[in-house]
Length: 249
Image (cartoon, rainbow, N blue to C red):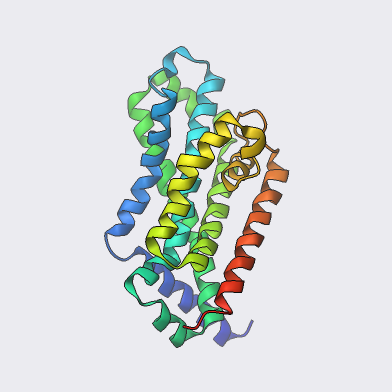
């Protein structure tokens, strides 16, 4: 890669990130990283009952709920595209920089956004949990055994952001993309995963749960789950490409 191409790539990525993190709406997206785990936790009764549970179960429950941050990363990745679509600036960006460059920069930005969303989510989720559990449970959650789950949850969030970016390119409509990236995973995929894991494990949320090695029966092992997530990414990427080469900006 020559110097001009590198500078163009860095500049384009910087522009995408500055555009993404501008405005107060981004604070709301990052806050969802804690709100979604708490929303799901209400149905499980955890951490209210954590004092009566084993250390192993508490660790599994914490990281299982932390994996729902991948749903927020899914939306955050789509927001890289849908935000500009909502404000009507996507066409101008494509005309000024070229479609291939804009697509590349947005995927790169989505990956970074996924990592940032995970970092903010796990800090807010873990920080708020620390205030409501007993010191003994807090010690369990901070043990070396607990942190072993971190890489899998981080990877699920990064993959979720890339998946969301593809959906954003396919749909290019803010509200429709929000429904597909946030509501359907929470209202359809997660209940299906909990009640029919043999079917739910093949869905994107099931793949993310497998990557994170959640303690649920019927999930794929981490490597097959990761390959399954790559399959979903390939399908979404192919769909996005098919739409983009036929769309006039």
